[in-house]
Length: 305
Ligand SMILES: [Zn+2]
Image (cartoon, rainbow, N blue to C red):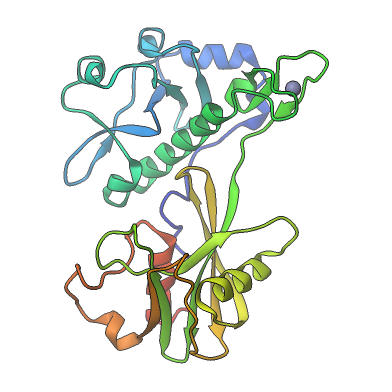
């Protein structure tokens, strides 16, 4: 079996059937085996270092550390321990070291995920993703009334009795594709990216189109390239803030380019041999190791695609 992408492959039993069993949930959080993953304004708590480690809170500290409205989401069970995500965004930044420990930091998972234990990284991604959904769905999209969490944090229900709509966590599909033509690959860069970074093209799936159609449309819009043979590769949870990346390889019908300057600063064809060489990172570098973009490129270079 192929190795999972970063942030995928989480070995956690989600036990969705237990989320409405409040006696079970209360028992888990009261038990000493619970492990609580705090999230502060979409950042995860870690001990930084060469291999950053996730920091878990004692369940006894939840009441003291939660900020109103208290939001504790049941993530699942692993090895006899129950995992919960806790939103602590209400604290001021300068209060965090005293509350969570001077050796710890709330960091953007993207800055440390590639260095972390895969399981911890995937768990933090899950916690971050679901708490971000809560933060952005405090009001009902149907009638505008406030919503409140249910099912241990996996549903939000409209508080207007006549409306009563249930809202479920969202994941927005995005396609990401390595387009190749013979021994060349199409990579582009956006102005906002770190100096030298080049990556695959990507974009959100629109209503009324298939994934394959989204791949073709995005490549043509951004680079003016027509593709054939769109082949699925793998997927990756990408809760930055709320996507799932659906990875593809596609073959271009020619190397003619018409780059849209609104979308990309540059795009071009890079040979296999160029991509296998070492470069000055400020001039050329591949995307981060935790990204599916990197995986799509590496698998193509290795001849696995
Ligand atoms: Zn409503």
